[in-house]
Length: 280
Image (tube, rainbow, N blue to C red; front, side, top):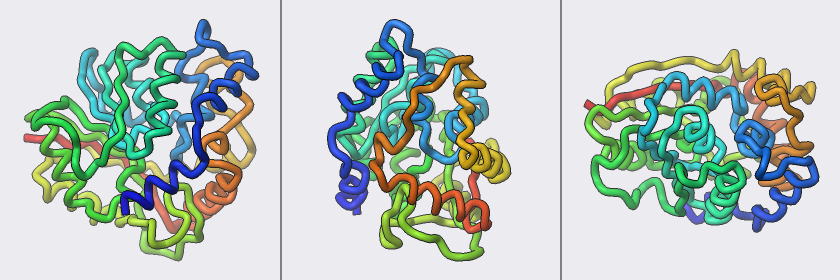
């Protein structure tokens, strides 16, 4: 299954030079580049950068916190945590081309000293027990069939008192998904649980719930803004985002994937949750 996931996310080939060229064409260079300028590229989960900001606020890490960003993609959330919260972030992703791009964008934004990206499998983490103050996970569980193994590994690498912060799409039990979706080109790739099943899966691994929030309504507001081609990044940063989006990473079929995702959200087929758990 992990080979299927890798082939899905890596199918559009080498990203780094294409993304850097697009940034340059938009007039954004390393001398002036900030993490928020990349939101159109690197915050392609439901809710965009605002969802990452909300999850970071829910976690509220202190400066110097060592965080594992699990499924770090091209590093958007890792850069947010390093830039806004002065955290040390290790990003792990199954897709090497994503890790290469994350490293390059970390350098472009001047955050490379706080970031480290490596390729690896979330079900067999290459870290010692009790290595991290927090684990961060956005839309990772959707691709993982063996969630018991996923959360068992997360608990293993968390320090006592450490926290898990998640942002996840969950099934609502109402209606059927239409494929392809950003995480699943066909049904066999899709591994959504409903909210209660996901919560109990995490609690059964020994973590304690600190916070649980239904973010579905906020996601629908973001959905409306997306369909109107609104650019919330410019409101947050006061700057005009680069004229590009996640299709630079996912390829030309990303629009169909996103349309199916947003329709499922509107139809109540899926919901969005954010939560924080603590290791005793």
